[in-house]
Image (cartoon, rainbow, N blue to C red; front, side, top):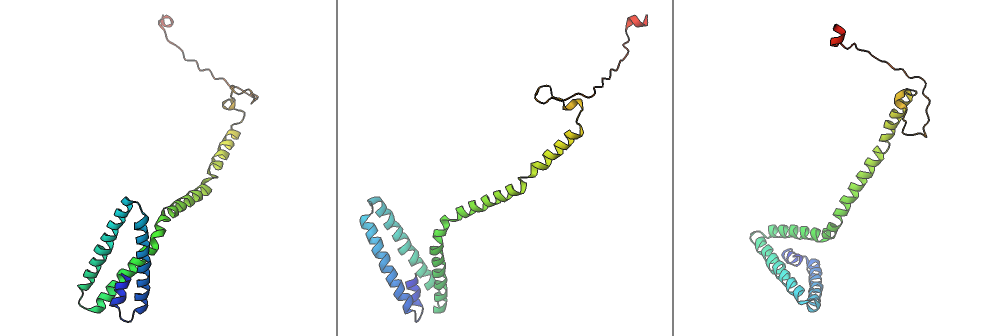
Length: 171
């Protein structure tokens, strides 16, 4: 695409030269891959090369040639090349994005932990204070734990008698 862009643009010999050199290196790489790859991988690679290089690039060339003015063709092709270059350069970063998301979520989890790690201490202090206020009452004595010996200071027993009316009492 940059080679086509360099041909459309005037005085772009550097772009044409660099693009020709890059195309030559990529062609050598693809030939070596096709020679040494297993048959199934060769067929798969050739299909994708035909689809993208012949199909995709030819489609872009036909679409840009629909513009009558040369300056519009150059502008559109420049944007297509810029988007393609950014996509090619940013694609290795695609593998990193899930890790960044995991890092951010882990950081958020640690921040929440630091904020709430002392939240139960206030509740425990309140419970201890309430138990301290009720110290000496019968409710604090737990006979199931003999190692906590507590002294009973006072036990108040209230017996409420309710008269029962029966037939015998009425007679």
